[in-house]
Structures are given as C-alpha cells and as structure tokens.
Length: 74
Image 1: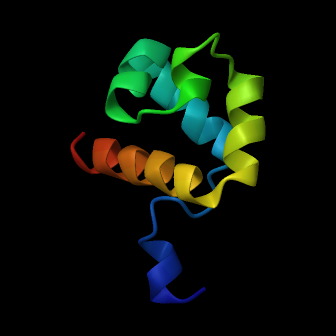
Image 2 (image 1 turned 120 degrees about the vertical axis):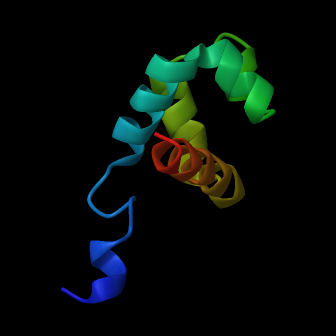
C-alpha cells in the first residue's frame, strides 16, 4: 500500500457509512444546512440520499469533503 492511501481518511469507508455517520452527528436538518441538496431537506432518507449521491459526483464530493473536515476536527 502506498503512503497516500495510508493517510486517506476515505480509504475503505463506504458512502453509506459516511452518510450514516454524518446523519448521526448532524441529522438531515444539519446536513441540509451545510450542503444544500434536496435529498437532505425534502423527505430525506439514507436510501434516497445514497441513490442520488451515487449518481451525482459533484454532490458526493461535497459530502466526502464535509466528512473529512469533521473527522479532522475531532
């Protein structure tokens, strides 16, 4: 394994695990305030959000960036 992957917080973490942790910490309301996406503000659920995030790269990047920021601030 190269050094870049050893220090990558996202390495080995699924999108579902990321989303569940963010929802657990912030709730959908807090998540929707930080990232303005309808999947977080209008009838949100883990499954519908995952479906959208898996299809929409720019949105997934925003969610992953928030996850990394929260992890680094712990």
